[in-house]
Amino acid sequence: MKGVVLAGGLGTRLSPLTRVTNKHLLPVYNKPMIYYPIQTLVNAGIREILLVTGGNSAGDFLKLLGNGKEFGLRHLNYTYQEGEGGIADALRLAEYFADGEPVCVVLGDNLIERNILQAARAFREQKRGAKILLKEVKDPQRFGVPVLEGKHVVNIEEKPHNPRSPYAVTGIYFYDSAVFEIIKTLKPSGRGELEITDVNNAYIRAGQLTWDVLEGWWTDAGTIESLFSANQLVAETGANKME
Image 1 (tube, rainbow, N blue to C red):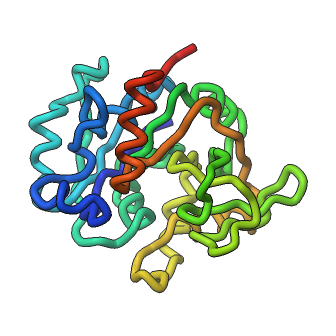
Image 2: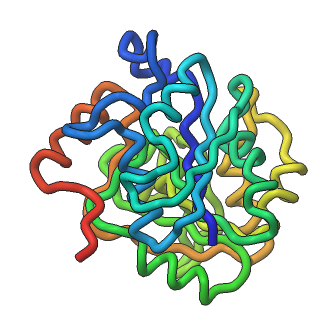
């Protein structure tokens, strides 16, 4: 399984902090934000990693990360997303890198307290389809929200005004190689983007999506409030623990 970190976008919700840099280069406590999703993949035993980024600060990732030596990697791959096409559009750029293998995708502003090792093992045994990780949150309307019937996710609603469950779909996804064919069938949403929720719903319709609840805390860091919270959480308890 290969890893993909999606770190593009303009980060407008973090303006003015992002006027001169990519949001994933902003600090979260004592490390740049981008360190955390890379470490999440490394802790899951994934050593082949692609970083998808864009914008005027794309070159700064290379200066910061190099070939990933700090993470015990021998090589780190990079690709460039032009424009603002959405998460699924960014993932589309990983098709050549994936080369038919399954991928674990982590959004660049997602931080976790512990690790995804168990979920990664379960997905390897699953062999096909997709797996998402859920987390109960206070404000699910900010995220994709799963509609649950028993142990099954029957639909995912994107940023619903009246969430039908207290769970958020975290920005950590496992996909087989069929994901790239699914992306090719997508049409832009009302926001003009290719939505990752549409990808997940395609797997649901095919009866090939499983889910787990993420252990420990989880947060994104895409708003001023969540960036502040992420700093507090990392300072108080640490992140990417292996125990």
